[in-house]
Amino acid sequence: MTLLEITDLRGGYGPSMVLHGISLRVDEGEIVVVLGANGAGKTTTMRAIAGLISSKGAITLDGHSIIGMRPDKVVAAGIALVPQGRGTFAKLSVDDNLLIGAAKRRDRAGVKDDLERWYEVFPRLAERKKQPAGTLSGGEQQMLAIARALMNRPRLLLCDEPSLGLAPLVVREVFSLLTRINSEQQTAMLIVEQNAELALEIASRAYLLEAGTVVSEGTAASLRDSDAVRRAYLGY
Amino acid sequence: MQLFLEYLFAGISNGAIYAALALALVMVFRGTGTINFAQGEMALFTTYIAWGLTTKNVPVVLCLLIATAAGFVLGAVTERVLIRPIERKSLLATLIVLLGLFLALNSLDGILWGNQNYTMPSLFPNAVSSFITVGGARLYWANLGLWIVVAVLVGAMFQLFNHTRLGLHMRATASNRESASLSGIPVGRILMLGWGFSAAIGAIAGVLLTPLSPDSLGVGEMFPILIQASAAALFGGLDSPGGAVIAGLLMGVVEALLSGYVPAIGGQLQEAIAFVAIVLVLLVRPQGLFGSKEVERV
Image (cartoon, rainbow over all chains, first blue to last red; front, side, top):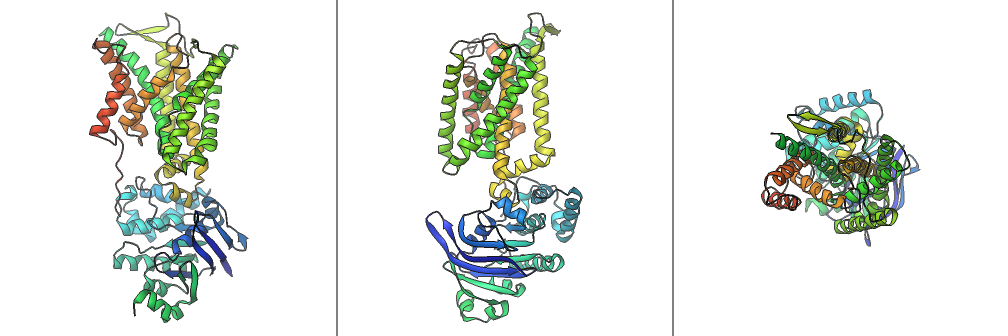
């Protein structure tokens, strides 16, 4: 079943267009990765889906159009974005950061259960519950950002460069947690990543962006072996 | 001792008003990132409304409530109509718009109510004999009442900030607006509420302050008070509500004691104290007493 479908997405910042007709889809429960060099339009695609920038074309979730919606409405529709740079509420406690993530929910008991659940999955956050989130390490803040996005119980999680600025070991940890969440919660994921090898390991399908268009798509395995990806990322 | 206490009482009353307005300024600053120059004039406009109603024999309590509601609407509409379309452009543009609003409201007051001054009836007993004696000094009911109302108001605002879902969403929006919207918070509505609350606080401050001295309701009433309140907000740290309240009180008391005991300052240089405070704070501790430098590991 198709969950997210993007058709001929065009957009950018003011007069400078970044996306020149991107089409992609994410099925329910699936992990899809978007690869591409700097400036290919990966982050812009994510921001367009989340409603942070205006765009043209079609974006549908479960067949319902979500294009042009305000970011908080997109969240209500079931999509949560973990932004590049993590979007930490630096002065607020880890607890408060997670409760903010539950902004769209009305079921207090359910929110409390989820809080406990994510503290179990991310034990290092539990140890720092009352600490200002800005004092966490980069890896911990990335986990906090993921847990925060999950608090709204999205059906689709968008992750923009989750590996940015993290040590290789921590990156592995983040990716294995994403895999675990995907298999336990059936949360579909669309992940933008520079670290192509690792991303292709956990994804089932992948898209390769170049200059605002999709130049290659297929299963993760087929992209791993493709010349285009090798040229763009692996340098041989 | 008696004289000291009388200066102190007067200082606490002024300080409570500075504190309330400084808190209002901080609320707007945290959300929008600017000092609301029109804060004082918004308070004055709603105080005129309250005064106008008292001349129609409406009970003062009811006038206060109506002025508070009017302030809330004025603040919320200002955010929605004037600030929201502009602030995306630049911070400077927002400041200019607020200066414009300051002038416009001030002129509107002049047109609607003229240039003469009025005496505002008090919420509390306000006769020459309505005081209790503390250590030989007179403490008027109007002052005591003002302290209590401001204390309750400040307490309620802190309760709202720190212990409610709305308060959490306000803090989130102040901390990182984009991230707040990505978490599902309707940031536009939150900012509008923040402006509404802050103008409502201003209205309450105006209605409480004006009866303390006769003939004080006039078009020039609020500007000097806004200056003092801005100094207090800066002194306490522009992003710290607690700092604003403490600095406001401190400022009122220091100002009253200095102008009382130092003849060279007297009533004339009283307002200069605020400017001295601003300069000192900016030199020594730009983030204010309780303001925070953002600490974030990356």
